[in-house]
Structure formats: structure tokens, C-alpha cells
Length: 323
Image 1 (cartoon, rainbow, N blue to C red):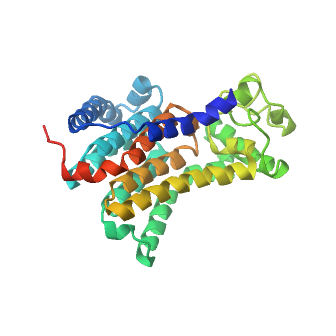
Image 2 (cartoon, rainbow, N blue to C red):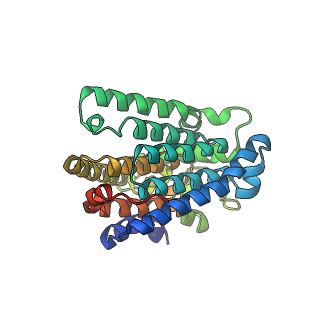
Image 3 (cartoon, one colour):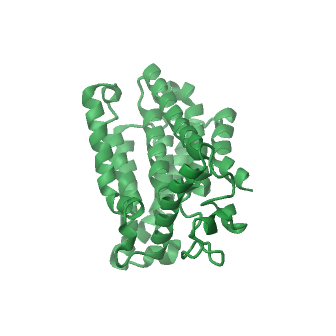
């Protein structure tokens, strides 16, 4: 069961990448219009939430769902567009309403989106030189500062502070314990269904009692609702080798998109790949998005984007008609 769950996002990516589905100009226009329609449906929820703070949780169950769907429809809009200056501005406007969700992860992604769209739209800014490396370093620093509270919470001693949610305590314990598992189970990890995954909670892995965390709220045998609430600790199942492979996968996709940029001098594919990669990296800090429906969707879209690179010039030379 855990093997299937862990394979799911990769299957989504490679199936789309190999199938290479194509959208006609008419279909792309329809896709843009649908994304705008969905956004206008969600817009009142976000605006009302500014006045009545519990509107989003009441309608969307959790603010993360609102932030996730805003991110998804915005990226799909950008993918279906001609990637003109107007389309980029509309993309950022669509993303902005997601700020009312109050999620620090979304703040980090929003900062990444602004830098990607406004700075890296210029092909000269994607070339590897000291100036661009400095700008990228500053951008990463800003993103880290935006999400600093959560970083300190999970990687520092933040869970000891008053007012911290129990879910955050569970996540911190998972992160802290995963480090011990990495060390104790070198180099291939503790194995599937053993730690920080849904299956490890369903069949309740003996590792939780071994590391004396089976009494922590959300990780206990009687209540394991937060065992699979974050992704990175689950990499302890695959050890240092698994971490290297996971990082290699994302580096390979970024390298492939940069190679496409080098050949076409068009920034659209690289920007979309960077946005989706950044979204997955940020989101997985406090959510198992990679193996959830959100990760499945994003990896499908990424496979679609990278599989259609040969038609990029045709799309740009023959822009879709605006309604």
C-alpha cells in the first residue's frame, strides 16, 4: 500500500510526459476562461473572509484548501495563456486573493511567483552569472524570511512556545525523530510503511514505540491523525539514498526546463517548472502534498508542460484569440 502511495506522483508525471496530450488554441482559450470563472467564484469567499475571518474554514473546511485551489487555477491559467505581460499580471492578481488564507507557505510561494514572473521573464536574467545568482540568493532569502516562523517551529524549539497548536507539536516530533532514523538506518532507511506515512499509522509501525513517540498527540496508536501530515520526515524510510534520489528528480526537471530555455530562449516552460517545483518544496514542509491529490495534480501538470516543449514556438507564434 505504501509503495503505491509513494509511486503515485511519479506515475502521474511520467504518464503525462509519455502520453504528450495536446491542446488546441480553442481548448486553451476555454481552459483560460474556466480558470477565470472558478477564480471569480472563489473571490467572494476570500473577500468576505477579510471581514468575517471564519468564512474560509466554514466553506473550504481548512484555509489550506483555499490557498491550494487558488494556486492550482492560477498556474493552469498561466499555462493556458500566451504568457504575455497582461497574462502575467492577471496571474499575480489571481494569486493575491490567496493571501487571505493566512498560510505562511502561501506567502513563500507568492514571493517566489513575484520574483519568477517579474524578474525571470527576461531571458537575459536566466543566464548563469554573478548578478543573477545574487538575485536568486536574495529571493531565496526573502522566501525563507517569510516562512521563518514555521521553519523555527519545525526545526528549532518553537513547539515549546505557548499557544502552539498540537498539530505543530506532532510535526516537530516527526522531524526530530526522522533525523535519528536517518542516522540509525544508514544508508537505505527504515523501509516502506515504517514512518510518517498513512500506512505506517494504519498498521502502526513499531518505530513509534522504539523512539518513544507513541504517546505524542496525533502520533499515538489510538489517534494517529497527524502521522502523515508532513512529507519530508517520511524520506527517513528511504534513508540518505532516498534523499539524494528525491533531490536529483527535481534537479533533473529544472535542468531539462533550462535546456529547453537555452534552445528556444522562451522563459515560459522554465518559469512554470520553477513555480511548480517551488510550490512542492514549500508545501511539503507542513503537508504531505507530494503524495496527496495536490501533488498528483501538480505533477500531472508538470508532465504536461515538459512534454509539450516542442510546440512552444508554435504556441507563441500563433497566440490564442482573446474572447
